[in-house]
Image (cartoon, rainbow, N blue to C red; front, top):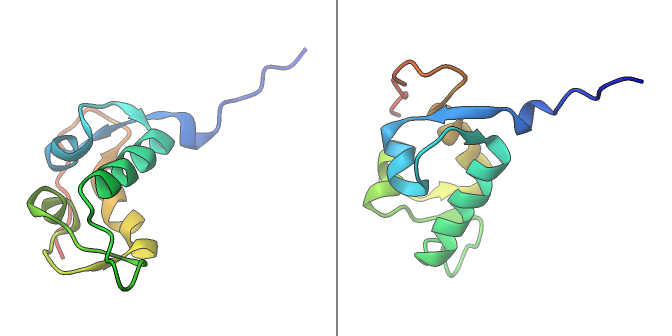
Length: 96
């Protein structure tokens, strides 16, 4: 009988203070991070009304994205990934 190894997406990751201000305290699986970020975007009406692919960050989310300018939803994950770590060491997220 073999034990199936959990997906890397389900392994809990630690969050930067900037990301925790948006979605809550970690650690949590990457899948939950994505769900919570999207929930935050929808709750705060941050998706652009004309171009739905763009996210217009508020003050908290701009700290995660490193900019207050609109971000394409497909590039959003690369900004978020700089705020995730597999260890508890403080995260020094890249700012763009």
